[in-house]
Length: 280
Image (cartoon, rainbow, N blue to C red; front, side, top):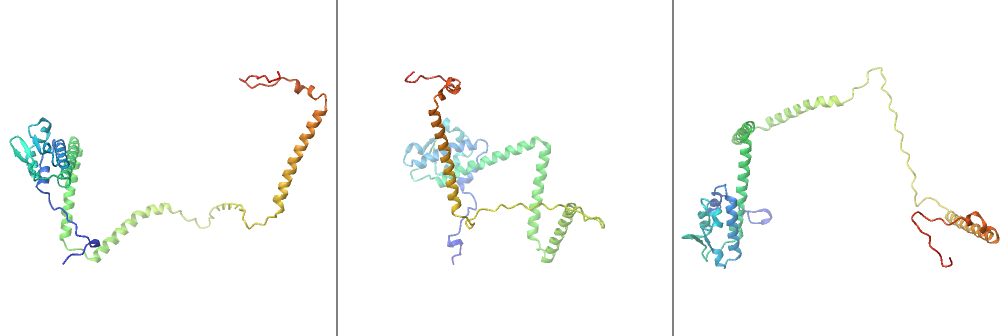
């Protein structure tokens, strides 16, 4: 009978342990493993992308450029788990073996990530070991962690607490929290006024005046905007008529151009120059 799963999808399969290739990768020494795996990753990528190229299926173990990888103990075992075969000083990949990204390149990247974490952990431990106080603290934390793990395992194996005892424990914890918070609440609560003493009256803040907003339902006379417009036009016409009248009086006066304003030279702005007209 098939087990029902989420959305009727097939059940997820999780890897319980590493295969031989992954184990051999993690068996490499941490010192220099990342640099060596970089070379192995390059070889594997070239072989996976160009499976028919013979130059990528044969590697010389004595090549100086490949020394960071082949100098690592266990490097030959890693390549053999991938399918490579050793022939004298060469590692040869048979034509029947095909390297791909999910099964080989990805596993190499995961191993590099593993060694990166190992190196970070070693640096952290070495830094803490330089300070005796930090080393003691680290040791105490490790002991506390082990004690908590042992206590958790004993709790799981022991008889579970009854609901009544659980409720009593929760009630005791709630009472403890309330007692701790009581002084703070008491300090924040103002003391009541004494008998016979009137509390000072606090003046009430004046309510803000609300401005009446103009609404479309407000009554307006139609003649008001029209009358205002006519008044503006009349005032503009009066100004024009007054200016016209002054101009006529100026033209009729023969001594108008003999006044002081006409005799003064024209003003020139700072930095400007006077330009002559056509008739000058």
